Image (cartoon, rainbow, N blue to C red; front, side):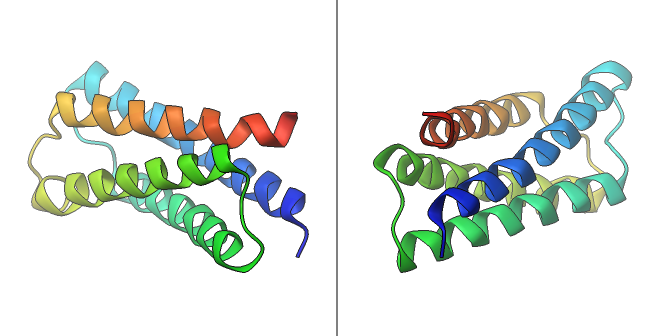
Length: 120
């Protein structure tokens, strides 16, 4: 397995995921309405695919230290995303802004930690 290809693929998936997350945040904070379910599911599916690839890479060939820390942060962000989905989105309750911001901030730091070894 080529670790560089795995990291670039995960970063590409996470870039698309982040764009969807930005779109959902704009909708939530701009219109005060929750994003559509299909967008939330697509966001989670792409994030889960990237997370699965990173976990597989970690346990088979290993990850650079910064990417491994990024993986840990993505696991935490994913848990926050699952909580947002199960406790609010699926019940039609408004997504809490503070949790959205924390979820996004953790994911952004994880993204940066993953991007550093890819581009250096």
